[in-house]
Length: 275
Image (cartoon, rainbow, N blue to C red; front, side, top):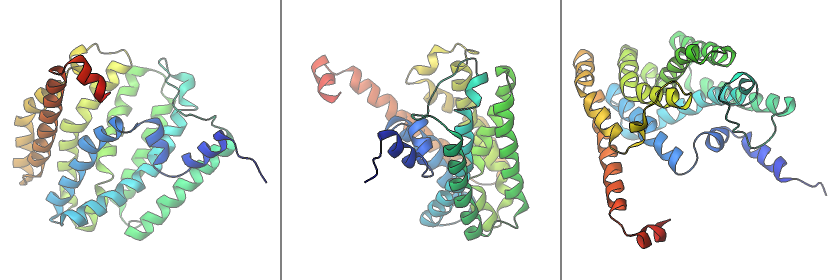
């Protein structure tokens, strides 16, 4: 019987779409929870609020859009974890197995196949806005891995973050003929999704010293400070959906701060029992 090593089994698992991102970027439960709170739930709120769809339909369309988008984004992750590390001044090896040419080819083939199937199912091959956004994503992914200077990578990072927020929502908007709200999504994502991630990126690359960012109340205060601009976005778009997203994020941060305060009040023995 053929013998399979741990590396072989790990590689097989990493070929499954979404698994590579979870293993290398979204550790469970923290990384998974952060993305659910800051990206996925806001995405569903906007999908429902901007299209008038039910929560179930909005969740399904967002999930399919997210899988299609993430198939391409994971290719970018894999390239960044192989070729990109050679030119990164602050490299962080993430892939748990060696990335060989054969593995990379199969990795890309699986994801492109799933992407093609989903676009066919959603009937998006004739949607120029979606195809244009996908083309922009691919160009920026290549650009982000080719750029050597961190100062220039900031611009590609911002674009990747905005497209990452927009693309999972595009199928819902286009299929419900609500493409007029694309700018609403970009504006909301820019203030509530991209800006916080930009601070993290700059800090990680050594281009910004912001120790306060790691304090629990920081993002609660940041979201509260963003309320006036989010209100303007809602007024211009004539929809309360951006305010609902802000409300969700504030509620999540209140819970996060409250949990931190509760933990601080525990005795050492209580903290040890929860560890």
